[in-house]
Length: 279
Image (cartoon, rainbow, N blue to C red; front, side, top):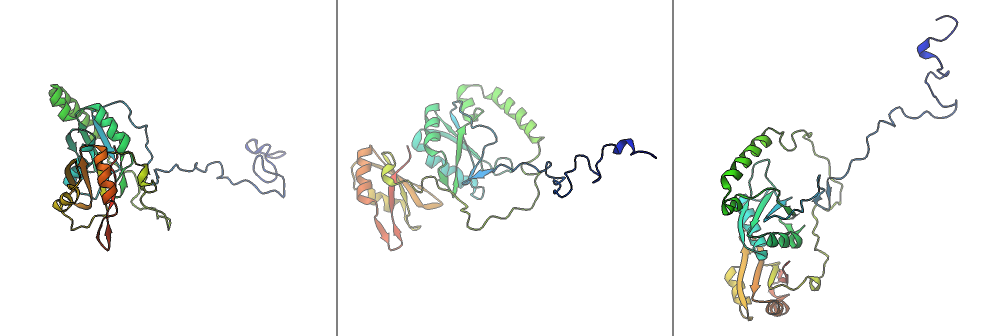
């Protein structure tokens, strides 16, 4: 327009932009306000940051996540049963290898007290190089539904929910296929009990053995530990022979065996570590 600036450019300073800074001062970046906020970490010290609070409503079943997905299901189930049975009667262990359920499992106890004790004592316990994340399961287990006499109703509800879940996108399907590089020197795994002195672990009638030779047998350990009064049994994990559990009648008897056999040398490369198992 002749005689004045076009309406859409009215009030524009000589620089050509509204609200431009005085001459001689740097202009703010046009993308500064559009920068996304820093993303929150999804994993801290090997433990996933939960997208929702852990379920604290008591249940007879423990939901276990952040399990090592490379371990075979039957081996994983057997290991979980061995770990959790020290807190009560384990009725069932459920785990699957499909893409929706891998890295997860359900451990069904006879009562809520056993489940609560297991969560308290095994939270972030490192199994196969990954710290477990435990919480009460949000749904009833099949084994409990059968025991309670409402399995038919329970099964129909579970199938309906399963059908709804199947319509949802698979985990990670929205994510790019490339992987971010890991900073050098970053510790891949975190053991929350690595720096706790043995004497600070509370007494327990069950002992936890570590650093055993791969060639060790159950009978070898039985012969070693049955020399002490109150000996009950030795429990081993089939594919993890470097660890085992030994049970005694009471804490005093297990403490005696622990005191006598901690540091027992099998060979120059294997000195057994004996601690109280987590209650």
